[in-house]
Length: 305
Image 1 (tube, one colour):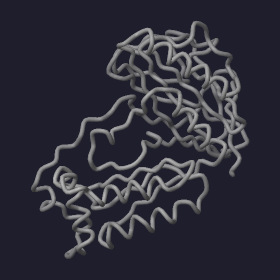
Image 2: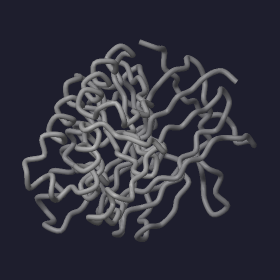
Image 3: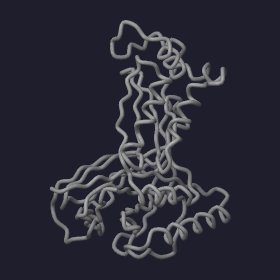
Image 4: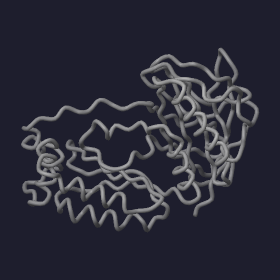
C-alpha cells in the first residue's frame, strides 16, 4: 500500500491550492426519451455491434429495459460489486458513447477483471473510460466503517438511470506539500450542521470542522462554505499537506441537528469516533422523527511540491 499523508496545522499564510466544488445532495435526473437511442452517435462510428447496440438501448431506454428484467444492468452491478474493499461506479455518457468507470479499488490489479467483465457485456463499440483510483487498506476498510454510521450516502444514481454501482467519491483533490487543504462545499436542501473529517492512514481522524478553533454552525439550505479557507468574519484552521504522501479521504456529514454537545478533540482515533457518531445519529433518529442527514466523501491524493 502506498504511504499516506497527514495534514498538519501551521501559521496562516498565502498559498495556492486546488478547489473543487461538490454538493451534499442528489442531482436532478437527466431527461430521457424514446428517440434518444436514434440520436446517439457515440464517437462517430459507422456501425455498432449487436451487443453494444443492446447496451445502448438499455441505458437510453431504462424503463423498457427494466420491464424486460434488465440483465445488462444486473450483470454490470455484479461485476462492480465483485471486488472487496472497493467502491465502483459505471456511468454511461451518451454524448461520447463511452462508459465511464469511476471509484477505487484496494490495489491496482483489482480493476482488470472488472474491465474484462464489462467489455464482455458491452461489446466492442462502447469504449470504457477507466479512471479507477487506488485507495489501499486500511483506508478502504475505514471507509466501510464510515458507511455504517447510519446516514445515507448522497448519490445521484438513485435518480439517474445511467449510473450503476455504489456511490463513490464525489471529487478527487490533488495537493502538493505545503498547500493549504480547502474543501468547497454546498449544504443540502435543508438547514443543516456540517461536520468535515479527514481520515489518515494511521487510523486517525482530523476534525476540519467543527473543532476547538472553528465553531459548529447552522447552515441555510444550499449555503456555500469553504472548509479550511481564511474567513474574514471568523476563525479558520490552516491545514497544510506534509509527508508521507499518498491516498487518503475526507468525509462531509450533514445533519439536521447537532450531533455532539461539545467539540471533539482536534485529532483522535477514528474507530471510537465513528462509534460515538453512530450512537449520536441513532439517538437523533429516536428523538426526532423528522431527522435528516447524509454524507459524501472526497478522494485526496498528495505528493511532493
